[in-house]
Image (cartoon, rainbow, N blue to C red; front, side, top):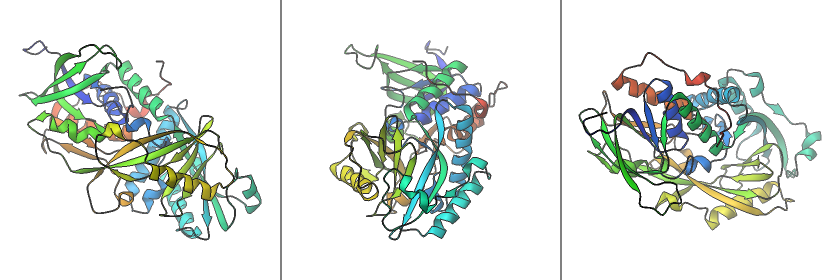
Length: 403
């Protein structure tokens, strides 16, 4: 306890998406007493509205982000090993047409590099689908089709994965508070004083109780709200300007295939995935600049039509209907480049270069959450020191959440 009889933690994490969950798990595994605060529910924001893919990011090879791809492939291998109930491998089919933006030799080279960056893992090999089997590709358009490659990546239920990481953090001794609305934080001599409001449950109409705790290190894992959280901290920590980029997905009521398809939009050459989602199909994603309250993110009519046009161009006989939709927000550094070409490397911004007491997480991929958390814990260790009892998150199993 501190002088104000407030509970003191080594680390307080704000935000219960996959990045915050990963930090809570890793910090507690490293021996730091940890509390994580979440406003509504675990993975309530973008972490439950992703493309549900655990992958290295084949398309990031185009922009030369080899380290990002390699990290993703390493994390994919760990998740397949440590979370077999939550993450499963699947075939991804990549068709090439006469009008495709990339030639066959370019795709072949990219897939070879992808395999190499995976460490030449046997399961990461790719194949060419013989033309004699094209009729078995679940209704894929074969007019002007020149070649079809297939390779392995993985899928997950992103919300369940996030809850599983929270469950792991709790099993290690981390404390959680959800729902808990972050109000403000103030710098103290030893770290930060964090104020937040709680209610009995997320649907409660009762007056929320105000609470406060102290911590030696504060982690801002607010996702799209990262700068909103930073603005409520005194003195204001360092931050960076960002763009929020919306990624929309449609859920279709008929399953197209048990496998995944990596398609190219005929209008702007972007990648769009068609994936099985339980007994339905998930179609996405888009990249649309978003302005406003992140809570209001939802697919636009233009995005719906864009996705349906991609679907129709590749699966012209599909007769299913849209039965659901969702939109998540990516956090990308502001810049002049088109959103599609901006780096997906996570940015970790601290309040000071040496011995920081605050860190903000900007961006980050679902697949790389554990690696990001490992980097955050390294920053925490620079300030708090390294505890003796350390559990490596590379070896921690993840199981289906019990609640």
